Length: 425
Image (tube, rainbow, N blue to C red; front, side, top):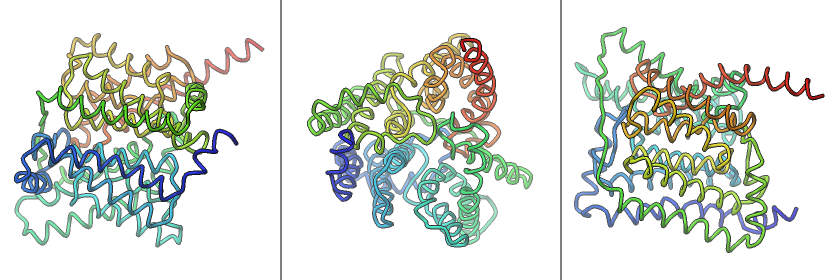
């Protein structure tokens, strides 16, 4: 009871206001990082450009435009959750941070709404409260590049292309809820990006259909460089500020509860806001952000739209499973896999694998450091090749790869775990 006191004493409205503080912070930062007169044209450019992997919005529209696009989109989604009466829980925070992170390299103010509409229609058709699937809809916007791709189909009138984009988006959003529930049983919660795995399946089917009709999907690699100093200051300021606020509110309980978090496996279904408090989870998030940012800088990587998206994903899942004890072994595994393959970790795909591999954090949390490192090595190998199946149309590329690794690895780890447990008994 004592662990929940501070969370329960903070009103729902206050919790939403604190959550909205994240996108507001970056909107303000964006106004200082790009000439004001270029921001709106930049936002328009990133909305009409193709945005499949890897399309860094820092390159396409500018840093300020990317931050403001991400901030506005996140505020809209937080507002939707508030309007539908949802209490603040782990997935409220996680989905907001993922929406922000991926709105730096693929999601924008135009291409997410048809998918959300499809999820709403599924809920309405099956007479299920929308609150049950709203977060699935938020996560499912990983497929938004497909909508933009439909709008760029050659040989069709703009009206037809817009209609096809909306229709495909609604269809994908309608399919997502049952599929995401179904695939959960395959990896048993050991890949935290469950909807990402479902999105990978949908994207594979859609891209296969497009290719069967002769639609060619090109290759993109927009990767911003040279902004590490300024962006590191912005990120460290935000994460340190988050941690200080949480410590001031929770006081002496923060560190004790944080140690309790480190003892958990982080298996899918974990919710540190419910189990501890809003502010203890926030402290864990801030520390994850500092470590993620520092990791990128230490290995010589670039802070840009995609890597900040990866960092914000680690931060967001700090409420639903990720912590230092279970993310670091998997990240070390990716570094090892990259070293063994003689590739540079600073290349775009390996760098994103280094951050998003933390979808497999529950493996390290449950089975230990060695298992986490093995999971990281396997994840690196899979993610380097699997994206070609759906041509970068699933923004949660690592979610699909992580699901495959978990399906392969977890049964083996469980069999050895059960054997050794029985032997000890």
